[in-house]
Length: 122
Image (tube, rainbow, N blue to C red; front, side):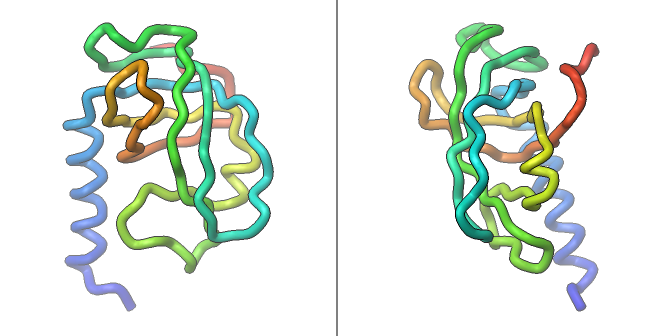
């Protein structure tokens, strides 16, 4: 059993990452392939379809790539952002909270939400 404080810290960490990340974008996923095994680290790539927060250097249509762990429930890594295999395979879009310097494609994913729907209209 996970102690209550550990669960609280995980939630607090996600909230902190989402509020402090300089970029908050929605991406339409491109070139996604099925991982050869799980858990594993994959490079996720997509085009920006919506910008919720940024500094003006990242624009609609820009390509972004970053690493993300894909795993099964119970195989979650400690620390890096991850997603479960089934939602990953079904996803068409990802809402991502990123650290990095555009146009350099060395982004660090801090948190994410996946979607199989059309781009969000906020």
